[in-house]
Length: 635
Image 1 (tube, helix red, strand yellow):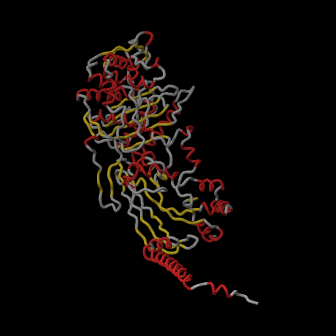
Image 2 (cartoon, rainbow, N blue to C red):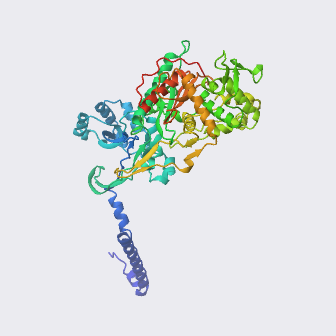
Image 3 (spheres, rainbow, N blue to C red):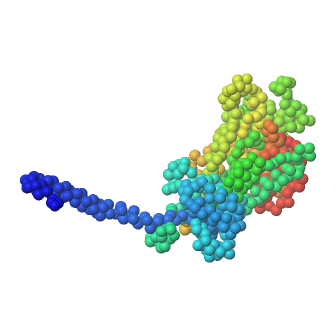
Protein backbone atom coordinates (compact mmCIF):
# COMPACT_ATOMS: atom_id res chain seq x y z
CA UNK A 1 0.00 0.00 0.00
CA UNK A 2 1.37 3.48 -0.91
CA UNK A 3 1.63 5.84 1.97
CA UNK A 4 2.64 8.84 -0.12
CA UNK A 5 1.30 9.88 -3.44
CA UNK A 6 4.38 10.31 -5.61
CA UNK A 7 2.44 12.40 -8.05
CA UNK A 8 2.56 15.29 -5.55
CA UNK A 9 6.36 15.54 -5.74
CA UNK A 10 6.21 15.49 -9.45
CA UNK A 11 3.82 18.46 -9.46
CA UNK A 12 6.03 20.77 -7.23
CA UNK A 13 8.46 22.74 -9.33
CA UNK A 14 11.71 24.34 -7.90
CA UNK A 15 10.82 27.75 -9.23
CA UNK A 16 7.65 27.69 -7.09
CA UNK A 17 9.46 26.90 -3.80
CA UNK A 18 12.30 29.44 -4.03
CA UNK A 19 10.20 32.65 -3.48
CA UNK A 20 8.52 31.08 -0.46
CA UNK A 21 11.85 30.21 1.11
CA UNK A 22 13.09 33.75 0.56
CA UNK A 23 10.02 35.18 2.34
CA UNK A 24 10.39 32.78 5.26
CA UNK A 25 14.07 33.66 5.53
CA UNK A 26 13.36 37.40 5.74
CA UNK A 27 10.67 36.80 8.36
CA UNK A 28 13.08 34.77 10.47
CA UNK A 29 15.79 37.42 10.12
CA UNK A 30 13.30 40.16 11.10
CA UNK A 31 12.23 38.32 14.21
CA UNK A 32 15.85 37.77 15.16
CA UNK A 33 16.67 41.49 14.66
CA UNK A 34 13.70 42.54 16.84
CA UNK A 35 14.73 40.18 19.62
CA UNK A 36 18.34 41.27 19.41
CA UNK A 37 17.33 44.95 19.51
CA UNK A 38 15.13 44.42 22.56
CA UNK A 39 17.91 42.56 24.33
CA UNK A 40 20.33 45.39 23.55
CA UNK A 41 17.86 47.98 24.87
CA UNK A 42 17.27 46.07 28.10
CA UNK A 43 20.95 45.55 28.75
CA UNK A 44 22.35 48.88 27.60
CA UNK A 45 19.66 51.57 27.45
CA UNK A 46 17.41 50.35 30.26
CA UNK A 47 19.96 48.50 32.30
CA UNK A 48 20.26 51.11 35.07
CA UNK A 49 16.52 51.52 35.34
CA UNK A 50 15.80 47.84 35.69
CA UNK A 51 18.74 47.38 38.02
CA UNK A 52 17.18 49.98 40.31
CA UNK A 53 13.84 48.22 40.08
CA UNK A 54 15.48 44.93 40.93
CA UNK A 55 17.33 46.43 43.89
CA UNK A 56 14.06 47.89 45.09
CA UNK A 57 12.97 44.38 45.84
CA UNK A 58 15.54 44.10 48.65
CA UNK A 59 16.75 47.65 49.35
CA UNK A 60 14.65 50.18 51.22
CA UNK A 61 15.37 53.86 51.74
CA UNK A 62 14.40 54.76 55.30
CA UNK A 63 14.17 58.46 56.20
CA UNK A 64 15.88 59.56 59.42
CA UNK A 65 14.08 62.36 61.23
CA UNK A 66 16.24 65.32 62.20
CA UNK A 67 16.39 66.17 65.91
CA UNK A 68 14.09 69.13 66.51
CA UNK A 69 15.54 72.28 68.02
CA UNK A 70 15.17 72.84 71.75
CA UNK A 71 13.18 75.72 73.26
CA UNK A 72 14.76 77.82 76.03
CA UNK A 73 13.51 80.58 78.28
CA UNK A 74 15.23 83.98 78.27
CA UNK A 75 17.76 82.75 80.85
CA UNK A 76 18.75 79.61 78.98
CA UNK A 77 16.58 77.15 80.90
CA UNK A 78 15.22 74.31 78.76
CA UNK A 79 11.45 74.51 78.35
CA UNK A 80 10.95 71.91 75.61
CA UNK A 81 13.46 69.20 74.72
CA UNK A 82 13.75 65.86 72.95
CA UNK A 83 13.96 62.56 74.78
CA UNK A 84 14.35 58.93 73.71
CA UNK A 85 11.37 56.65 74.06
CA UNK A 86 11.25 52.86 73.67
CA UNK A 87 7.85 51.66 72.62
CA UNK A 88 5.89 48.97 70.84
CA UNK A 89 4.38 49.20 67.36
CA UNK A 90 1.99 47.01 65.41
CA UNK A 91 1.55 46.70 61.65
CA UNK A 92 -2.09 47.29 60.57
CA UNK A 93 -1.94 44.82 57.63
CA UNK A 94 -0.55 42.08 59.88
CA UNK A 95 -3.18 42.83 62.53
CA UNK A 96 -5.89 42.52 59.87
CA UNK A 97 -4.49 39.15 58.79
CA UNK A 98 -3.92 37.88 62.34
CA UNK A 99 -6.54 39.63 64.53
CA UNK A 100 -5.68 37.42 67.51
CA UNK A 101 -2.43 39.41 67.83
CA UNK A 102 -4.43 42.38 69.15
CA UNK A 103 -5.74 40.38 72.08
CA UNK A 104 -2.30 38.99 72.91
CA UNK A 105 -0.71 42.43 72.78
CA UNK A 106 -3.48 43.91 74.90
CA UNK A 107 -2.71 41.45 77.70
CA UNK A 108 1.03 42.05 77.48
CA UNK A 109 0.70 45.85 77.56
CA UNK A 110 -2.25 45.78 79.98
CA UNK A 111 -4.37 47.76 77.54
CA UNK A 112 -7.88 47.22 76.28
CA UNK A 113 -8.46 45.67 72.88
CA UNK A 114 -10.55 48.71 72.03
CA UNK A 115 -7.67 51.11 72.71
CA UNK A 116 -5.34 49.14 70.43
CA UNK A 117 -7.95 49.00 67.67
CA UNK A 118 -8.41 52.74 68.02
CA UNK A 119 -4.67 53.25 67.55
CA UNK A 120 -4.70 51.03 64.46
CA UNK A 121 -7.67 52.90 63.02
CA UNK A 122 -6.10 56.35 63.38
CA UNK A 123 -5.97 58.16 60.06
CA UNK A 124 -2.46 58.39 58.66
CA UNK A 125 -1.02 59.33 55.29
CA UNK A 126 0.46 55.82 55.02
CA UNK A 127 -2.15 53.19 55.99
CA UNK A 128 0.49 50.44 55.98
CA UNK A 129 2.85 52.22 58.35
CA UNK A 130 3.16 50.54 61.78
CA UNK A 131 1.26 52.33 64.53
CA UNK A 132 2.87 53.07 67.86
CA UNK A 133 0.67 51.31 70.40
CA UNK A 134 2.51 52.34 73.57
CA UNK A 135 5.50 54.52 74.43
CA UNK A 136 7.88 54.37 77.39
CA UNK A 137 7.31 50.64 77.88
CA UNK A 138 9.08 49.13 80.91
CA UNK A 139 12.12 46.86 80.49
CA UNK A 140 10.38 43.71 81.72
CA UNK A 141 7.61 44.04 79.13
CA UNK A 142 10.09 44.79 76.34
CA UNK A 143 12.13 41.70 77.23
CA UNK A 144 9.02 39.53 77.13
CA UNK A 145 8.03 40.82 73.70
CA UNK A 146 11.49 40.19 72.27
CA UNK A 147 11.58 36.66 73.72
CA UNK A 148 8.22 35.84 72.13
CA UNK A 149 8.80 37.63 68.83
CA UNK A 150 7.83 34.56 66.75
CA UNK A 151 4.43 34.51 68.43
CA UNK A 152 3.84 38.20 67.75
CA UNK A 153 4.09 38.85 64.00
CA UNK A 154 3.82 42.52 63.12
CA UNK A 155 4.84 43.60 66.62
CA UNK A 156 8.12 45.50 66.94
CA UNK A 157 10.09 47.22 69.67
CA UNK A 158 10.99 50.71 68.46
CA UNK A 159 13.19 53.53 69.67
CA UNK A 160 12.25 57.09 68.74
CA UNK A 161 12.99 60.65 69.74
CA UNK A 162 9.93 62.48 71.00
CA UNK A 163 9.20 65.94 72.36
CA UNK A 164 9.79 66.23 76.09
CA UNK A 165 8.11 68.72 78.41
CA UNK A 166 10.11 68.96 81.66
CA UNK A 167 7.43 71.14 83.27
CA UNK A 168 4.35 69.26 82.08
CA UNK A 169 1.57 71.58 80.95
CA UNK A 170 3.42 74.75 81.97
CA UNK A 171 3.39 77.24 79.09
CA UNK A 172 1.42 74.87 76.87
CA UNK A 173 -0.36 77.68 75.01
CA UNK A 174 2.94 79.45 74.33
CA UNK A 175 4.96 76.40 73.30
CA UNK A 176 2.17 74.61 71.43
CA UNK A 177 1.78 70.97 70.44
CA UNK A 178 2.96 68.72 67.60
CA UNK A 179 0.84 66.80 65.10
CA UNK A 180 0.84 65.15 61.69
CA UNK A 181 0.93 67.52 58.74
CA UNK A 182 -2.24 67.90 56.66
CA UNK A 183 -2.36 67.87 52.86
CA UNK A 184 -3.08 71.60 52.87
CA UNK A 185 -0.07 72.26 55.10
CA UNK A 186 2.25 70.28 52.81
CA UNK A 187 1.55 72.82 50.06
CA UNK A 188 1.42 75.85 52.32
CA UNK A 189 4.79 75.19 53.98
CA UNK A 190 6.81 74.54 50.83
CA UNK A 191 8.52 77.90 51.18
CA UNK A 192 10.16 76.98 54.50
CA UNK A 193 11.20 73.38 53.90
CA UNK A 194 10.73 70.02 52.26
CA UNK A 195 7.60 68.53 53.79
CA UNK A 196 6.00 65.18 53.04
CA UNK A 197 2.76 63.49 54.07
CA UNK A 198 3.20 61.90 57.45
CA UNK A 199 5.64 64.53 58.76
CA UNK A 200 5.13 65.73 62.32
CA UNK A 201 5.09 69.53 62.64
CA UNK A 202 4.18 72.24 65.13
CA UNK A 203 0.43 72.78 65.09
CA UNK A 204 0.13 75.65 67.58
CA UNK A 205 2.17 78.10 69.63
CA UNK A 206 5.81 78.79 68.80
CA UNK A 207 6.20 75.19 67.62
CA UNK A 208 4.06 76.32 64.67
CA UNK A 209 5.35 79.88 64.19
CA UNK A 210 9.00 78.83 64.23
CA UNK A 211 8.57 75.51 62.39
CA UNK A 212 11.12 76.44 59.74
CA UNK A 213 13.73 77.24 62.39
CA UNK A 214 13.12 74.32 64.76
CA UNK A 215 12.87 71.75 62.01
CA UNK A 216 16.12 70.28 60.72
CA UNK A 217 16.92 68.42 57.49
CA UNK A 218 16.10 64.74 57.23
CA UNK A 219 18.77 62.10 56.73
CA UNK A 220 18.32 58.65 55.20
CA UNK A 221 19.52 55.04 55.27
CA UNK A 222 19.64 52.54 52.44
CA UNK A 223 18.86 49.27 54.19
CA UNK A 224 19.01 45.72 52.85
CA UNK A 225 15.92 43.79 53.90
CA UNK A 226 14.80 40.19 53.61
CA UNK A 227 11.65 38.89 51.97
CA UNK A 228 9.57 39.72 55.03
CA UNK A 229 10.89 43.27 55.10
CA UNK A 230 13.11 42.95 58.17
CA UNK A 231 16.39 44.92 57.98
CA UNK A 232 19.55 42.92 57.36
CA UNK A 233 22.25 45.56 56.95
CA UNK A 234 22.82 49.26 56.29
CA UNK A 235 24.28 49.89 52.84
CA UNK A 236 24.58 53.67 52.94
CA UNK A 237 23.65 56.36 55.45
CA UNK A 238 23.27 60.14 55.37
CA UNK A 239 23.07 61.85 58.75
CA UNK A 240 20.27 64.35 59.42
CA UNK A 241 21.01 67.98 60.28
CA UNK A 242 19.44 69.03 63.61
CA UNK A 243 17.09 72.00 63.78
CA UNK A 244 18.09 75.30 65.35
CA UNK A 245 17.29 76.03 68.98
CA UNK A 246 14.87 78.80 69.93
CA UNK A 247 15.23 81.18 72.86
CA UNK A 248 12.02 82.83 74.06
CA UNK A 249 11.43 86.11 75.87
CA UNK A 250 9.56 84.11 78.53
CA UNK A 251 10.96 83.95 82.05
CA UNK A 252 10.37 80.46 83.45
CA UNK A 253 9.97 81.59 87.05
CA UNK A 254 7.53 84.40 86.22
CA UNK A 255 5.62 82.03 83.93
CA UNK A 256 5.19 79.57 86.80
CA UNK A 257 3.92 82.27 89.15
CA UNK A 258 1.63 83.76 86.50
CA UNK A 259 -0.07 80.44 85.89
CA UNK A 260 -0.49 79.81 89.60
CA UNK A 261 -1.75 83.35 90.25
CA UNK A 262 -4.38 82.97 87.53
CA UNK A 263 -5.52 79.65 88.98
CA UNK A 264 -5.63 81.22 92.46
CA UNK A 265 -7.79 84.06 91.11
CA UNK A 266 -10.25 81.56 89.68
CA UNK A 267 -10.36 79.68 92.98
CA UNK A 268 -10.82 82.99 94.83
CA UNK A 269 -13.78 83.83 92.61
CA UNK A 270 -15.42 80.53 93.49
CA UNK A 271 -15.00 81.21 97.20
CA UNK A 272 -16.13 84.82 97.19
CA UNK A 273 -18.99 84.60 94.70
CA UNK A 274 -22.42 85.62 95.88
CA UNK A 275 -24.05 82.94 97.98
CA UNK A 276 -27.15 82.77 95.82
CA UNK A 277 -25.32 81.93 92.61
CA UNK A 278 -21.57 81.73 93.11
CA UNK A 279 -19.05 82.79 90.50
CA UNK A 280 -18.62 80.35 87.64
CA UNK A 281 -15.09 81.59 86.94
CA UNK A 282 -14.32 78.70 84.63
CA UNK A 283 -11.56 80.28 82.53
CA UNK A 284 -9.15 83.19 82.24
CA UNK A 285 -5.89 84.58 80.94
CA UNK A 286 -2.88 86.58 82.07
CA UNK A 287 -0.15 88.43 80.19
CA UNK A 288 3.14 89.88 81.43
CA UNK A 289 4.89 92.22 79.00
CA UNK A 290 7.95 94.45 78.97
CA UNK A 291 6.69 97.93 77.93
CA UNK A 292 10.19 98.94 76.84
CA UNK A 293 10.36 96.53 73.90
CA UNK A 294 7.21 94.39 73.60
CA UNK A 295 8.76 91.21 74.99
CA UNK A 296 6.26 88.77 76.46
CA UNK A 297 7.63 87.68 79.83
CA UNK A 298 4.76 85.31 80.62
CA UNK A 299 1.47 84.29 79.05
CA UNK A 300 -1.07 82.04 80.68
CA UNK A 301 -4.43 80.66 79.66
CA UNK A 302 -6.77 78.55 81.76
CA UNK A 303 -7.89 75.80 81.46
CA UNK A 304 -4.76 74.33 79.97
CA UNK A 305 -3.67 70.96 78.56
CA UNK A 306 -0.66 68.63 78.42
CA UNK A 307 1.16 68.73 75.04
CA UNK A 308 2.34 65.15 75.61
CA UNK A 309 -1.19 64.01 74.74
CA UNK A 310 -0.38 64.74 71.10
CA UNK A 311 2.84 62.73 70.88
CA UNK A 312 2.35 60.02 68.28
CA UNK A 313 -1.18 61.19 67.55
CA UNK A 314 -3.83 62.07 70.09
CA UNK A 315 -6.51 59.50 70.89
CA UNK A 316 -10.11 60.15 69.93
CA UNK A 317 -11.06 60.15 73.59
CA UNK A 318 -8.50 62.78 74.56
CA UNK A 319 -9.32 64.92 71.52
CA UNK A 320 -13.02 64.81 72.34
CA UNK A 321 -12.27 66.02 75.86
CA UNK A 322 -10.13 68.90 74.59
CA UNK A 323 -12.84 70.21 72.27
CA UNK A 324 -15.74 69.62 74.65
CA UNK A 325 -17.58 72.78 75.69
CA UNK A 326 -18.09 71.28 79.15
CA UNK A 327 -14.32 71.39 79.63
CA UNK A 328 -14.16 75.04 78.47
CA UNK A 329 -12.02 74.32 75.40
CA UNK A 330 -8.55 73.93 76.97
CA UNK A 331 -6.80 74.35 73.60
CA UNK A 332 -7.98 77.97 73.28
CA UNK A 333 -5.34 80.56 74.11
CA UNK A 334 -7.55 83.08 75.87
CA UNK A 335 -4.76 85.65 76.02
CA UNK A 336 -5.31 86.09 72.27
CA UNK A 337 -9.11 85.84 72.25
CA UNK A 338 -11.61 88.70 72.38
CA UNK A 339 -13.79 89.83 75.28
CA UNK A 340 -15.60 92.98 76.47
CA UNK A 341 -12.93 94.83 78.50
CA UNK A 342 -15.18 96.91 80.73
CA UNK A 343 -13.51 99.76 82.61
CA UNK A 344 -10.00 98.58 81.68
CA UNK A 345 -10.78 100.41 78.41
CA UNK A 346 -11.53 103.78 80.05
CA UNK A 347 -7.99 105.19 79.54
CA UNK A 348 -8.73 105.15 75.79
CA UNK A 349 -11.79 107.33 76.32
CA UNK A 350 -9.83 109.59 78.67
CA UNK A 351 -6.88 110.17 76.33
CA UNK A 352 -9.08 110.56 73.25
CA UNK A 353 -11.32 113.12 74.95
CA UNK A 354 -8.30 115.13 76.13
CA UNK A 355 -6.70 114.96 72.68
CA UNK A 356 -9.89 116.17 70.98
CA UNK A 357 -10.44 118.95 73.52
CA UNK A 358 -13.69 117.45 74.79
CA UNK A 359 -12.51 117.77 78.39
CA UNK A 360 -9.59 119.11 80.38
CA UNK A 361 -7.70 117.98 83.49
CA UNK A 362 -9.48 120.69 85.48
CA UNK A 363 -13.07 119.82 84.49
CA UNK A 364 -15.39 118.71 87.29
CA UNK A 365 -18.36 116.35 87.06
CA UNK A 366 -21.37 115.61 89.24
CA UNK A 367 -22.35 111.99 89.80
CA UNK A 368 -25.67 111.37 91.54
CA UNK A 369 -25.52 107.67 90.77
CA UNK A 370 -27.99 108.04 87.91
CA UNK A 371 -27.20 109.80 84.64
CA UNK A 372 -30.01 111.15 82.45
CA UNK A 373 -27.95 112.86 79.77
CA UNK A 374 -29.82 110.99 77.02
CA UNK A 375 -33.24 111.68 78.59
CA UNK A 376 -35.07 110.23 81.56
CA UNK A 377 -36.31 107.31 79.48
CA UNK A 378 -32.72 106.36 78.73
CA UNK A 379 -31.24 106.84 82.20
CA UNK A 380 -28.05 104.96 83.07
CA UNK A 381 -26.67 104.03 86.43
CA UNK A 382 -23.17 104.45 87.76
CA UNK A 383 -21.84 101.30 89.43
CA UNK A 384 -22.11 103.25 92.71
CA UNK A 385 -25.84 103.90 92.80
CA UNK A 386 -25.42 106.35 95.67
CA UNK A 387 -23.23 108.53 93.46
CA UNK A 388 -19.69 109.87 93.72
CA UNK A 389 -20.78 113.48 94.15
CA UNK A 390 -18.64 116.22 92.62
CA UNK A 391 -15.31 114.96 91.36
CA UNK A 392 -12.56 115.83 88.92
CA UNK A 393 -11.29 113.86 85.97
CA UNK A 394 -8.50 112.18 87.93
CA UNK A 395 -10.89 111.04 90.64
CA UNK A 396 -13.28 109.89 87.92
CA UNK A 397 -10.59 107.48 86.73
CA UNK A 398 -9.50 106.46 90.23
CA UNK A 399 -13.08 105.68 91.30
CA UNK A 400 -14.00 104.32 87.85
CA UNK A 401 -17.03 106.61 87.88
CA UNK A 402 -19.30 105.56 85.02
CA UNK A 403 -21.08 108.93 84.99
CA UNK A 404 -17.86 110.76 84.08
CA UNK A 405 -17.35 108.46 81.11
CA UNK A 406 -21.01 108.55 80.08
CA UNK A 407 -20.58 112.31 79.74
CA UNK A 408 -17.38 111.94 77.74
CA UNK A 409 -18.99 109.32 75.52
CA UNK A 410 -21.92 111.61 74.79
CA UNK A 411 -19.51 114.40 73.85
CA UNK A 412 -17.83 112.03 71.39
CA UNK A 413 -21.20 111.18 69.85
CA UNK A 414 -22.06 114.83 69.38
CA UNK A 415 -18.84 115.31 67.41
CA UNK A 416 -20.39 113.10 64.75
CA UNK A 417 -17.06 111.84 63.39
CA UNK A 418 -16.63 108.54 65.25
CA UNK A 419 -13.58 109.96 67.00
CA UNK A 420 -13.78 107.52 69.89
CA UNK A 421 -13.50 104.70 67.36
CA UNK A 422 -10.56 106.52 65.79
CA UNK A 423 -8.65 106.73 69.06
CA UNK A 424 -9.50 103.13 69.86
CA UNK A 425 -7.85 102.03 66.63
CA UNK A 426 -4.88 104.37 67.09
CA UNK A 427 -4.25 102.65 70.41
CA UNK A 428 -4.34 99.19 68.85
CA UNK A 429 -7.88 97.92 69.19
CA UNK A 430 -9.69 96.29 66.29
CA UNK A 431 -6.46 95.08 64.66
CA UNK A 432 -3.87 92.38 65.25
CA UNK A 433 -0.92 93.24 67.44
CA UNK A 434 1.26 91.09 65.18
CA UNK A 435 2.53 88.78 67.90
CA UNK A 436 4.61 85.88 66.59
CA UNK A 437 2.01 83.31 67.60
CA UNK A 438 -0.90 81.84 65.63
CA UNK A 439 -4.63 82.28 66.21
CA UNK A 440 -4.59 85.89 67.45
CA UNK A 441 -8.00 87.59 67.25
CA UNK A 442 -8.29 91.20 66.13
CA UNK A 443 -11.27 92.00 68.30
CA UNK A 444 -13.86 94.59 67.32
CA UNK A 445 -14.35 98.33 67.53
CA UNK A 446 -18.02 98.83 66.61
CA UNK A 447 -19.10 101.76 64.46
CA UNK A 448 -22.00 102.79 62.23
CA UNK A 449 -20.88 100.66 59.30
CA UNK A 450 -20.32 97.58 61.43
CA UNK A 451 -23.74 97.88 63.08
CA UNK A 452 -25.45 98.37 59.73
CA UNK A 453 -23.79 95.28 58.25
CA UNK A 454 -24.27 93.21 61.38
CA UNK A 455 -28.02 93.92 61.34
CA UNK A 456 -28.49 93.78 57.58
CA UNK A 457 -31.47 91.47 58.04
CA UNK A 458 -32.95 93.62 60.82
CA UNK A 459 -33.27 97.20 59.50
CA UNK A 460 -34.81 98.41 62.76
CA UNK A 461 -31.51 97.74 64.56
CA UNK A 462 -29.15 99.25 61.99
CA UNK A 463 -29.09 102.81 63.31
CA UNK A 464 -26.21 103.97 65.52
CA UNK A 465 -27.59 105.68 68.64
CA UNK A 466 -25.97 107.98 71.22
CA UNK A 467 -26.22 105.11 73.68
CA UNK A 468 -23.92 103.02 71.49
CA UNK A 469 -21.12 105.54 71.85
CA UNK A 470 -21.83 105.98 75.55
CA UNK A 471 -21.54 102.21 76.04
CA UNK A 472 -18.30 102.15 74.07
CA UNK A 473 -16.89 104.87 76.34
CA UNK A 474 -17.04 102.56 79.36
CA UNK A 475 -15.72 99.52 77.48
CA UNK A 476 -19.11 97.89 77.00
CA UNK A 477 -21.55 97.46 74.12
CA UNK A 478 -20.18 95.53 71.17
CA UNK A 479 -16.51 96.28 71.87
CA UNK A 480 -14.22 93.23 71.99
CA UNK A 481 -10.55 93.22 72.96
CA UNK A 482 -7.99 90.58 73.87
CA UNK A 483 -5.91 90.56 77.06
CA UNK A 484 -2.87 91.00 74.82
CA UNK A 485 -4.35 94.14 73.23
CA UNK A 486 -5.07 95.53 76.69
CA UNK A 487 -1.46 94.77 77.68
CA UNK A 488 -0.31 96.64 74.58
CA UNK A 489 -2.46 99.66 75.54
CA UNK A 490 -0.99 99.85 79.03
CA UNK A 491 2.51 99.43 77.59
CA UNK A 492 1.90 102.49 75.43
CA UNK A 493 0.82 104.45 78.49
CA UNK A 494 3.69 103.13 80.62
CA UNK A 495 6.48 103.95 78.15
CA UNK A 496 5.17 107.38 77.18
CA UNK A 497 3.51 106.68 73.84
CA UNK A 498 5.41 103.99 71.90
CA UNK A 499 3.84 100.87 70.42
CA UNK A 500 6.12 97.84 70.26
CA UNK A 501 4.95 94.69 68.55
CA UNK A 502 4.47 92.02 71.22
CA UNK A 503 6.71 89.02 70.63
CA UNK A 504 7.86 85.80 72.28
CA UNK A 505 10.79 84.94 70.01
CA UNK A 506 14.06 86.33 71.37
CA UNK A 507 16.91 84.58 69.55
CA UNK A 508 17.93 81.68 67.35
CA UNK A 509 20.74 79.45 68.61
CA UNK A 510 22.51 77.18 66.11
CA UNK A 511 22.10 73.46 66.70
CA UNK A 512 25.71 73.15 67.87
CA UNK A 513 25.15 76.23 70.11
CA UNK A 514 28.09 78.08 68.58
CA UNK A 515 26.09 80.99 67.18
CA UNK A 516 23.32 83.03 68.80
CA UNK A 517 21.32 85.40 66.59
CA UNK A 518 19.06 87.93 68.33
CA UNK A 519 15.74 88.75 66.65
CA UNK A 520 15.48 92.49 65.99
CA UNK A 521 12.28 94.49 65.72
CA UNK A 522 11.72 95.83 62.22
CA UNK A 523 10.89 99.53 61.69
CA UNK A 524 7.23 98.64 61.16
CA UNK A 525 7.19 96.81 64.50
CA UNK A 526 7.34 100.03 66.49
CA UNK A 527 5.66 103.39 66.12
CA UNK A 528 4.95 106.57 68.01
CA UNK A 529 1.30 106.98 68.96
CA UNK A 530 -0.03 110.47 68.05
CA UNK A 531 -1.00 111.50 71.57
CA UNK A 532 0.62 114.44 73.33
CA UNK A 533 3.08 113.76 76.12
CA UNK A 534 1.12 115.84 78.64
CA UNK A 535 -1.99 113.73 78.03
CA UNK A 536 -0.07 110.50 78.63
CA UNK A 537 1.49 111.97 81.78
CA UNK A 538 -1.95 112.93 83.11
CA UNK A 539 -3.24 109.44 82.37
CA UNK A 540 -0.28 107.90 84.20
CA UNK A 541 -1.01 110.02 87.27
CA UNK A 542 -4.69 109.10 87.21
CA UNK A 543 -3.86 105.39 86.99
CA UNK A 544 -1.55 105.69 89.99
CA UNK A 545 -4.46 107.06 92.00
CA UNK A 546 -6.48 103.95 91.14
CA UNK A 547 -3.93 102.08 93.26
CA UNK A 548 -3.35 104.62 96.01
CA UNK A 549 -6.93 105.74 96.66
CA UNK A 550 -9.20 104.13 94.10
CA UNK A 551 -10.79 100.81 93.19
CA UNK A 552 -7.54 98.82 93.51
CA UNK A 553 -6.49 100.31 96.86
CA UNK A 554 -7.47 97.21 98.81
CA UNK A 555 -5.69 94.83 96.47
CA UNK A 556 -2.39 96.74 96.73
CA UNK A 557 -2.52 97.84 100.34
CA UNK A 558 1.01 97.68 101.76
CA UNK A 559 2.66 96.87 98.45
CA UNK A 560 6.12 98.52 98.52
CA UNK A 561 6.45 99.39 94.81
CA UNK A 562 4.64 102.17 92.96
CA UNK A 563 1.97 100.70 90.68
CA UNK A 564 -0.39 102.28 88.14
CA UNK A 565 -3.40 100.40 86.84
CA UNK A 566 -7.11 100.07 86.26
CA UNK A 567 -9.80 97.68 87.42
CA UNK A 568 -12.50 96.44 85.10
CA UNK A 569 -15.71 94.50 85.60
CA UNK A 570 -17.26 93.76 82.23
CA UNK A 571 -20.93 92.93 81.88
CA UNK A 572 -21.62 90.17 79.35
CA UNK A 573 -25.12 89.31 78.20
CA UNK A 574 -26.27 85.97 79.57
CA UNK A 575 -23.15 85.54 81.70
CA UNK A 576 -21.72 86.70 84.98
CA UNK A 577 -19.33 89.66 85.07
CA UNK A 578 -15.80 89.28 83.74
CA UNK A 579 -13.05 90.45 86.10
CA UNK A 580 -10.19 92.54 84.64
CA UNK A 581 -7.13 94.25 86.01
CA UNK A 582 -4.38 95.93 84.00
CA UNK A 583 -1.33 97.62 85.50
CA UNK A 584 2.36 98.40 85.20
CA UNK A 585 5.23 98.81 87.67
CA UNK A 586 7.31 100.43 88.92
CA UNK A 587 5.14 103.41 88.01
CA UNK A 588 8.11 105.77 87.87
CA UNK A 589 10.25 103.43 85.74
CA UNK A 590 7.98 100.77 84.21
CA UNK A 591 9.48 97.34 83.55
CA UNK A 592 6.42 95.12 83.61
CA UNK A 593 2.86 95.36 82.38
CA UNK A 594 0.48 92.80 83.85
CA UNK A 595 -3.05 92.03 82.66
CA UNK A 596 -5.30 89.47 84.34
CA UNK A 597 -8.77 88.51 83.11
CA UNK A 598 -11.11 85.95 84.69
CA UNK A 599 -14.19 84.94 82.73
CA UNK A 600 -17.30 85.24 84.90
CA UNK A 601 -15.05 85.96 87.86
CA UNK A 602 -16.83 88.95 89.36
CA UNK A 603 -15.10 92.23 90.18
CA UNK A 604 -11.67 93.15 88.87
CA UNK A 605 -10.46 94.78 92.08
CA UNK A 606 -11.13 91.76 94.28
CA UNK A 607 -10.43 88.89 91.87
CA UNK A 608 -7.99 89.93 89.14
CA UNK A 609 -5.97 92.62 90.97
CA UNK A 610 -4.62 90.35 93.76
CA UNK A 611 -3.35 87.97 91.06
CA UNK A 612 -1.55 90.85 89.35
CA UNK A 613 -0.01 91.82 92.68
CA UNK A 614 1.41 88.31 93.15
CA UNK A 615 2.89 88.36 89.64
CA UNK A 616 4.45 91.80 90.12
CA UNK A 617 5.96 90.79 93.45
CA UNK A 618 7.78 87.91 91.75
CA UNK A 619 8.84 89.96 88.74
CA UNK A 620 10.18 92.77 90.93
CA UNK A 621 11.80 90.44 93.46
CA UNK A 622 9.60 91.60 96.34
CA UNK A 623 8.85 89.37 99.32
CA UNK A 624 5.11 89.90 99.69
CA UNK A 625 2.41 88.14 101.67
CA UNK A 626 -0.42 89.48 99.57
CA UNK A 627 -3.39 91.69 100.44
CA UNK A 628 -5.54 89.19 102.30
CA UNK A 629 -9.29 89.44 101.74
CA UNK A 630 -10.25 92.18 99.28
CA UNK A 631 -13.72 93.57 98.63
CA UNK A 632 -14.54 95.47 95.44
CA UNK A 633 -17.94 96.30 93.97
CA UNK A 634 -16.84 98.70 91.23
CA UNK A 635 -17.16 98.27 87.53
